[in-house]
Length: 88
Image (cartoon, rainbow, N blue to C red; front, side):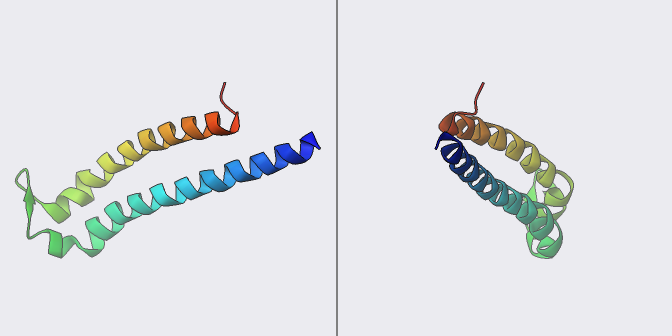
């Protein structure tokens, strides 16, 4: 019976993990590909620190967002590990 509960808990853990991973990767894709490539011309009408916004997203913005998402993922996973009892 305990083995069955462990499998259910592990399955729920991975389902929630994949949900968060999908959300965070979607944000990163949106910032890097959509803002930096597809909407570049529209965003270039605006400036950030002297640079066109589309150029800024392509060169720096996507990197900043990726680093922030790493820390967000780390925080989310720590909470998720505690929730399911996988923390150390």
